[in-house]
Length: 301
Image 1 (cartoon, rainbow, N blue to C red):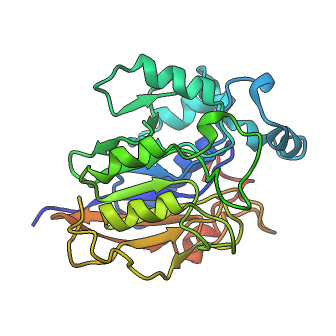
Image 2 (image 1 turned 30 degrees about the vertical axis):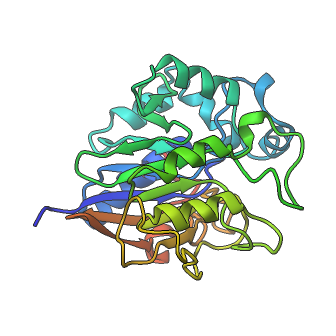
Image 3 (image 1 turned 180 degrees about the vertical axis):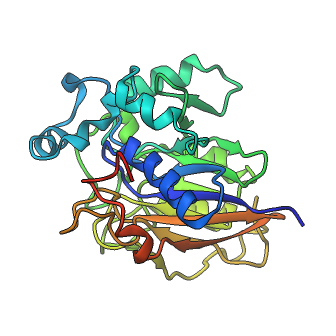
């Protein structure tokens, strides 16, 4: 039996990229478990300069400079040097795109990486890596992880006036229906998963057809939780990936924003994915492991 590969899965970061890396190092030291990587469900808050930020990000940044944390990694900075050069920070982060991102820059990096590359670096350290829209990134000792960018653009409560790549593209979903993968990173969720009238039928169809072992999304408020759902594959045939007999586990992750009263991460904002021998388990990080890590001490804890 292979030793499990351990990943942390994060909800929306909205700029808190370096705190996520520090939390990974803190959690690994606290539990004695080495990390193979970090996974993230979009709204990483990737903006290359203030002129590219959307109005919501700028509004929040007036009260919380962590919203602009991506600026600390797009060029070399002292704080990023300290985080990435630390002996306990040996892992990278892979993300999908949400709706609060600099899509022009993401698409530029994705194109520059070449047609045969499934992921692409967006930072000066090559430690923060996007998975291309509708592609599958195979971890050498872990799962095959697929990404769908954006949010639903067709439903009655769909957001308006987003850049084109802020919406889910049908062609990206179509590509994944014939791919084998184990984990789906998406920003939006299935219909009605967190809010009546919201969610994506395209994502629901993808889950039913591809049947990955896990599907993770963010985007919505509230604590993270497992989404109870019916497997509606019906007569659509065998899945492209994952287990033919095991239902996909779908999870919503809360935003990892550290806006609680004491400044620690929100409940259900980060979880542990362990993968070995073609299967995995997922569980949210316990509150006891969240509370010692706060917005006040994250640089040193």
